[in-house]
Image (cartoon, rainbow, N blue to C red):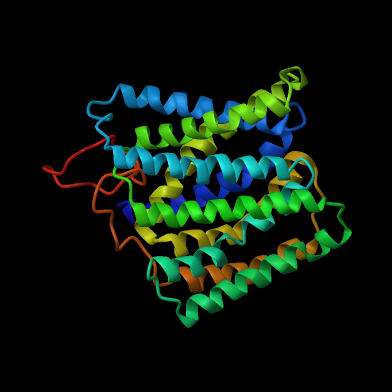
Amino acid sequence: MSLQPYRIPVLIVTFCLLWSAAFAAAKAALIDCPPLLLITARFLLAGGLTLIVAAARPGAWHISRRDVGVLVVLGLANNALYLGLNQLAMTTVAAGLAALIASANPVLTAVLASAFLAEPMTWRKAAGLGLGVLGVAVIVEHRIAIGADAPIGITFAVAALTALVAGTILFKRLKPAAGLWIGTGIQNLVAGVAVAPFAFTFESVSDVVPTWRLLWALAFLVLFVSILAYVIWFHLLTVIGPSAASAYHFLMPPLGVFFGWLLLGEHVELRDLVGILPITVGIYFVTRLAGPAHRPQRQGVGVLPVALHVPVAPDAPMRDV
């Protein structure tokens, strides 16, 4: 029996689990490490690892100046600004609330995709987005009402969301043709270089407490989020489009709450589970007509390794796969 029909669903589930768990992992790491130093180490390690892999691949460094510029911009938006601002936010807000704010991604992405990418805003998509917002509101209304989250932290989280959505739209509009490993490596390295001056200016290395908790959290964030989750994310943007891919961010609040409970002992209430129903229906509406019908036309940053990607013709160019 062929596993091909299950490829996209498996990738979606994997992405959602990794992306939502990252909030709790980052929150745990912040106990032992200041936020800017944490993401500087995360970016530089992820960038170094992927560039080492790229160096071992023939033709991986064949990249145009235009694509280098595009990757620099994407690295600043998707990595430096999004994750940097999110890390600062989680020093004063709960991981669940950070996941909530990030879950507004589908609404903002759908609006901007309609304006800049000519994606149609159908009644079904609008209804799905509305149901997703309703489900998220049900989950977090009480949590925000009784919480003590700092306004500055909420501001940082909203700014982080804006940066991620901007990076999503730019990726689809600019379509970099660089290979997977070199593209991911450049984005992470650019982000690390951009954040490092602020980290070493405003934070002290002496505040880092070397613990096993920090080591495991950093390893998870580097290997499974900054590399694997981002690879899957760019692939989903390529094959199902930004609006459909972003719709799965509606799952981040319930999953974020679950991982907050599992890893950090954060409280979970019944309404956290009730809100999953409208979220599920909303995702169905947004993604019902979306699917892997629009295959990538060239091997780019959004293309997975051959083990996960759609088979190509024998004479098709194989770059970084």
